[in-house]
Length: 86
Image (cartoon, rainbow, N blue to C red; front, side, top):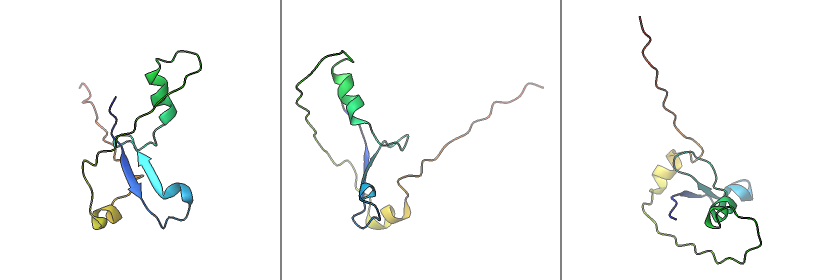
């Protein structure tokens, strides 16, 4: 299973949990990695010894100027209206 995420690194962040932020590129939510592993065992009850392989491939890197202008927490939304019948 291949998932795509955006990693934002801010070594000077005020809080330690904001220094390395992994987010879903569409929803902006932080991934729940335990849910991904749960999918791997088909949600079946039991105790498992697991090997989890994390393969990181950088698809694109924003310049520092671009990263400073973007807010990793900002997720744009599109509202679409339906025409009303007259």
